[in-house]
Image (cartoon, rainbow, N blue to C red):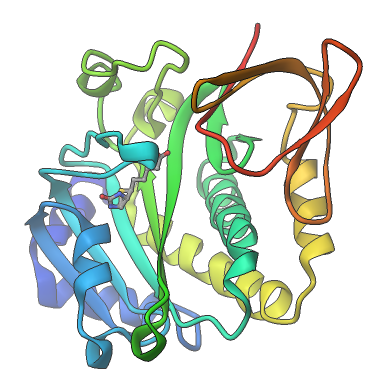
Length: 277
Ligand code: BTN
């Protein structure tokens, strides 16, 4: 496998696109590719692409992001070597299903990482991908509900061929530490094959499950990959804070918690979930 050369190929836009297109076994996802050496945010770029260029499955990739966006207004540190990618969906289902879109994004990443590195990642509700309790990937879903331009953009931020110190030193969220595939594998990963694998798995989950309303199957797959159950967690929801144990994910994708006072709470909207160790 060619590590550095394959990574460098990201600089060579026509070549990278040709190789990815040839490799991809998808019918719609990845058929239109925007690739940049540098962007403020692939997410913002994808959200503001005009209707005519926002075909279902269009992807936007940047080698580095200068203003990467994380959840709840956080900054996403995105140096060279990571996988910073946004995918445009033109959903044929209700936007109430957005939580399931987050689930399938995380599932596609977990399965792709396993295929390529044999590492077993764990999922943290709703969409963090962890290795040894450290975050390796986050998923962000943005929605545009304008009638003429209804679209959903899924952003995948995967710490691939970078050193975690580049990120950990700048984090102001004390709840979670970050890791990278380079550190977990001891070598760099071929981003071309990683992207191919993620997109193929995403299409499978989107076409075969989500578009057909098979949300219970998605929840079951998600649960299999999570070890949150039984663990003590704290959920921060604005100024409110709930403590308890995770007991389930309900049919709407909400996290079901047994609180310390014995009551059961279903969490849909939240600002942050922290697992106690
Ligand atoms: C999270 O906070 O866990 C979600 C992070 C999502 C980051 C990705 S990187 C590609 C896309 N572009 C962005 O600006 N953000 C998302």
